[in-house]
Length: 462
Image (cartoon, rainbow, N blue to C red; front, side, top):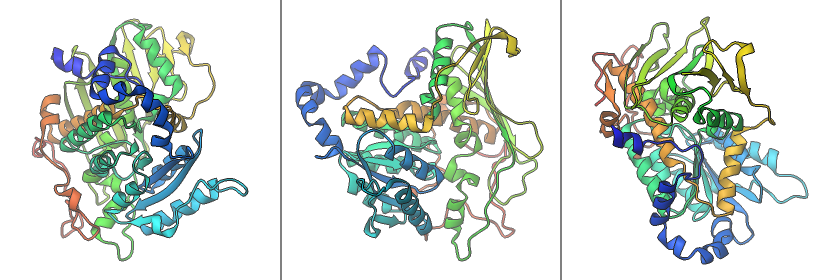
C-alpha cells in the first residue's frame, strides 16, 4: 500500500514539480540535457517552423473539438489550423466553415487554411491529419474517448505535441496504452496536455493550495456530485449505419464514452483526488436504470464509494433524472472545516465549519475571472514555444482510471481494487484499431431494439 501511495502522488500542474520527478525526467531525456544549448537554439524551429507558426490538426469535430481548436488559435504567437478529420462529413465542413469565419480576418494572415484535400472523413483520417503537422505541430484529439489511446500513440510516434480531451480511455488496456505513449512522449520531449481543465482554473488552484497548506486540517471525506436532468438520445439518421448511429450518440454507449461516471464525473473525481493528493485503492458501489427508457446502455444513476490509502473515503454520486435535486461540484470535509469547489462551482469557498454557512467563510477567491478552457491551451503552447517540460499524461490517465474503477465496481456490484482494475484485460471494443464505418459495433440492439445493459451481480469486469 505504501508503494502504491508513492506511485500515485498527484501533480497539480503540467510541470513536474517535485525533485524526484525532475530527476526522472532528466534521466529519460539525457540527450536533451546534454545538448541543452543546441536545443535552445533550434527550439523555435523544431516546434513552430521557420516562421514560428505552429501548425494544428483537429481530430474530432464535435462541439468540444471545435471549441478546443478555437482555444488553440487564440494562444499567443502565430498558429494555423491546417487539417481536420471526423467520421461525419458535415461535421468536417461545419468545423472548417465556422473556424474560417471566426479567425480569418481581412488584411491579416489566415489562421485557418484547410482546403478540401486536407479535410478528411473516416476512421483512418487521423493518420493523414497528423502526418500533415508532424513533427513539431499540435494535434487536438477530441473524438469519443475510446479512440484516444490509438490516436495518441500515432501522434507521439510521429513527433507531434498533443492536446487530448478527457476521458482519455474507456478501459484498463486503453489506460495502459495512454501511459506507455506518455512515457514515449517524455523521451522525445513532446508536450502533452490533458483536458482536465479544472486543473488550470486559477481560483480552484488557489483553493487546493490552501487545503494542502492545512487550512482545514486533515481531509477526512470527499463528495463528488453531478446531478442534473436526463440525457437525450438522438434519433437514427436516415440511411445511417448502426456504427454511425452509436458514434453520433456516443455519450449513450459505454464502449464509446466509458459511462456516465467516467466521462461526466471525471473532473470532480479528479478534483477530489487532487485535494487528497492520492488516488483511490479500491471502490464499491451501485447503479442502474431506474427511470430511463431510451434504447441505449446508460445507467441513469451511480453511487460509488472509493477508499484512499489512508482509509478515508470519496463518495461519488451521479444522476441524470428529471425533476430531481441537482448539484454539480465537490464538498470536502477536513478536521477543522470544509470546502465547496470543483467543476460547476466557479467561486470556491472554504468554511471554518462543516455546514457551509455564509458567515463561516474563511477564504474565497477574489482575483480576476479565468477561462479554464483557454488557459490550458495557453500553458501548452507556451511550453511548446519555450521548450519547457510539459506532460500531463500520467495524471490524466489516473483520473480516467478512477472513473473506470468506479464503473467496474458499480456495474459488477463487487469490491474492486485499483490493482485489479488497472491490470484488467477486458476491452470494451476489441479490435478497435481496425474498425471502419462499415464495421459492426461491439454492441448491437436485439430484436426489440434494446442494447445490453450491465447487471450488478452478473456483469463481469475483470
